[in-house]
Length: 192
Image (cartoon, rainbow, N blue to C red):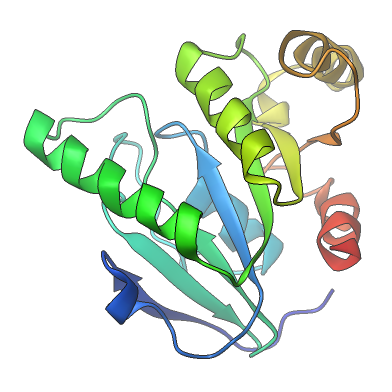
């Protein structure tokens, strides 16, 4: 897919701030610093539309990116690590839950996991939540550039065995650095 005019639309913390257009929303979930913002930039072939940071926990609102008035990429705050206070974490958790439970425009959830590590307890909780939501989803084994190309397929299989042993969920490798997996991901997005 060739993206011509992507734009950041709004950061939201409540439904009244969500975009009013009835476009499909592709939601990115994953732990802090797993590469959700880098994923957006890679998929739309832009360097800095979605702000990235080497410091985990920077995204604290729901960020909506309008992709050519066809759909939104929705970047949720990461889970698992943050310098936020307990109170801030609870507030962020509440508005994420409110969004995921009530937003009818969600057409696909993309769960990003780090290909180099076993899924954390938080990853497993998110996986279980996504399954129970009934919303279509795929899993991306991100940061594939951090391991040898010859080990990527096996790492994806290992991840599959740990998080989805019955193998009924699509798991694809991804790398914001190498940009070699974007076509496969676009095919999955366009299918849903």
